[in-house]
Every structure is written in C-alpha cells, then in structure tokens.
Length: 217
Image 1 (cartoon, rainbow, N blue to C red):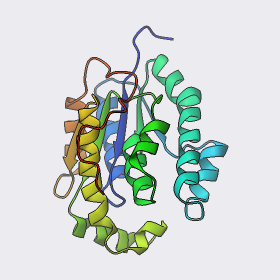
Image 2: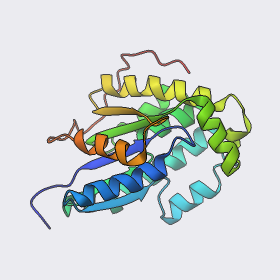
Image 3: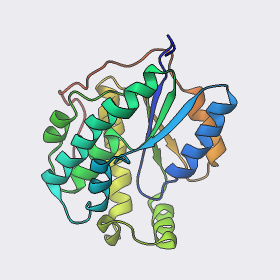
C-alpha cells in the first residue's frame, strides 16, 4: 500500500453523451501522465450490481433507487476505497449525479435520494458531460434503445436540463464539479480538460442535506 491516496473521479451525463469514449480517453491521458488508473462502473459488476442492471427496466421508483444505493455502498467498500488506498486513481462510470437525475425522472423525490446518499464517499472531481438534446437523440437512435427511458422522445432534453440543475446543486453542497459540453469536443480534448481540473485536496466526506438551489425537474 502506498502512502499517497489515489483520486476518485466520476463521470455522469445523459445516455448517448459519450461517457464511454471519454472514460477510455481519460484512462489513456492519466496513464500517459504516469498515474495508476482503475476503471469501474455503476451499477457495479458484483452480483448485486449485475442484478440491478439487468432488472432496471422492470423495477421502478423507490425500489430501484434503494437497489442502486445498496450496490453503491458495497461498491465503495469492496472496490473503490481499497483501490484508492492502494494509490490508484479510480474513474467511475456513473455515480451520484446519475442517481439524482435518473431516479428523479423515475418519480423518486430529491429529498429521499439525498438521504440515501448521505454517507457515500464523495468524488474528488465529479464530471458531468452534456451535449445538445438533438445530438443525444440521434446517437440513441443509431445505437438502439437500451432502457425504458429511451422510449420517450422528450427524454434527452429532460435529462440535459436535470443534469444541469444537479450540477448546480452538487456544487452548492461543496462538491467539485466540472461540466463539459461534448457536442463538438473530441474525447481526447475532454479527457485533457478533466485531467487538468483534478484537485490536489479531497472534497468534504459527506454530502450536505440542505438544498440551496432549485430542484425542479
């Protein structure tokens, strides 16, 4: 185990915004800077995470939110914290911002979601990717529907709007948030911007429960 804790980076954003390609580019960017990197994803690849992912179209609302959070707490303890303590920088595909957006869109109140996330490990940098709703809709159409939300043609616009509000809310609660528009940016450019924005010190260890920004959908 090294004495230097690794950094915890999360990437969130609407479906079709380019998270996967940006994460791969960020991995290359960080490795090129001599930083040991570990990639992970939520829901996790554990039995609980796999169950959650495979049943997300059939389980809705509060029940799905609780499944997602049970997986998150186990994910942090079993994989994320040990990797950070070993000196690895962890890049997680989806984390708290996705929960605050997707579960709200699924009818779960923000207050309930904040309470569920009250004791999570906060990222050192929370990256939220965005793009024009039209571009996102085209990408989803090209790759095919993968989630029940994609059946709603208005969903890209709703997601973009709520991720914007979520970025403001998380910033107000003391989290370091970077919002990047990927409409015209290449993955390598986005990755360099993320790497350049990494903080030297960690953010507070708990999420403030007091909302200070508008919470509408």
